[in-house]
Amino acid sequence: MAFLSGPRLLDWASSPPHLQFNKYVLTGYRPVSSANECLKSLFYLHNELGNIYTHGIPLLCFLFLLPLNIPWAQITVTWLGVVHFLACLSPQLGSVLYHLFMNHEGGAPIYHTLLTLDMCGICMINTLGALPIVYTTLLCYPSTRSVALLAYIILSAYSIYCAVTARSSVRRLQSFAWQALFRFFFFYLRWVGLGTGSPTSLQQYFIMDFLALLGGLINITRVPERWRPGKFDYWCNSHQIMHVLVVGSIMYLHWGVLDDLLWISSHRCPVE
Ligand SMILES: [Zn+2]
Image (cartoon, rainbow, N blue to C red; front, side, top):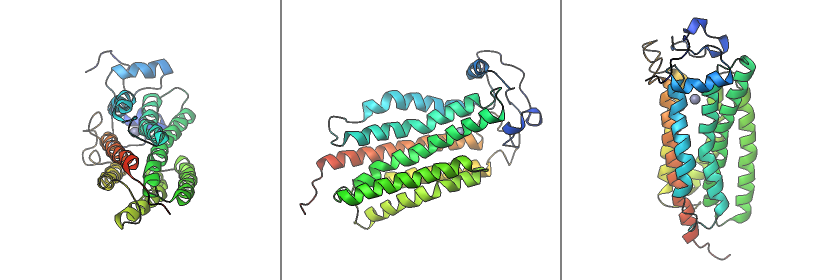
């Protein structure tokens, strides 16, 4: 697996205290490193390698393939396509930087800055990712739509504040609850016929939120490594499973938003 021979890896007890966040991952910790050494860790096996690549590979795929997959010529509200593209990139970007440089020699302050960046990436997809949903749901009510978009952005700013100041992963997950409730309200409007949108997208959004919630719960409960500590140090631990589920969740967001953007261009609102 390793292309380069890496430094001697540490066990949980001898890794820096700020990296001891999962007591069921017993080995494979990189030593404190310079930025250059962190970059070199892309090429040898350690316990963050799976986390880096499970978001690094999708990041590159989304960066180059998503713009080709969005039918720019057919969509009438171009800025929603741009916002959606940025939304899909943001969680992977923050995550790759966090996992790659978390053992930087700058220590705990650098670690916490990177963690904030990772949280901001998640907040950005929650925020930007939902704007096309809100827009489409209230397509025929322009003033209500503007107020709702503004309210969601303000609520999201509050969620970002809660997420970056949270002291545990449970609290971090809770920070996103208000955004989720707001989104569910819009799903409800569509469900009962008060909101508008593509008939196929609502199901995609439900699967999107289900996968994201499942990933968050698996990450919090540290399953499966809590059952066999040390067995999942390198592969298939809870955080990696969450990463994969998050990528799946983004794919469903993408399919739902594509359906909605195409639906907007073919829909005519009744004249008031
Ligand atoms: Zn992560």
